Length: 277
Image (cartoon, rainbow, N blue to C red; front, side):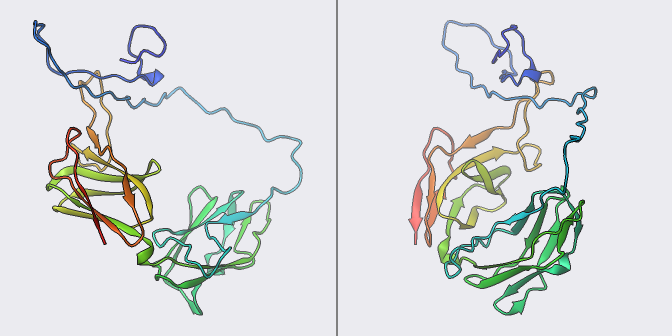
């Protein structure tokens, strides 16, 4: 047990880690090796807790600044810069009060893309454009006058963004040879961010269109098959779901692939990685 506040007892509210063994242990002269899994319990929400109301400052005058950024690199239009795994995101500096998606127009070369899906996020400060991208293609995003405004009736500035999408050879891929098990969820991370996940419903799992870089792989023993890791509970004698982490970083290169054999995977054995052109 991790005793952060030194009170000699377990406090889940203090984010203390704990591990326990479900079976009884008989003392003996021989050595006994027991593997324990530490975890943090999920805190229950305090129904008595509240968020204090913050009064707006009486010194605030004038309109709230209203601008936005777009996740498009327009510095070198001829270079392939936009990731075809992504959507276009428009992030505003203030909540949007009026939003007209008919004034957001996406063109591939000279052709208007009417199939793109445009939505304003529920937080009212982000909008996304989901597109079935063509590879190695020139696009133009037109944000027309009055496409968005805030509650102070300040309109977002009209602008045009030109960019080029990447193509398949700009990406790499990873193939996993696994044993079929619907409770095994293979999770691929990059920079500690979950990129892809897939259940082992076949002996071959392929993660395609991966941007070059270093990746980490984990395997979740998803006992309740809900697609996410579940913590344990000390009072209920419930163990956390086990996550096995592949110790080596997996390097992905452009126009290159790795084949990883995980059929006998565990932390004590190293699986083999094979490069594929």
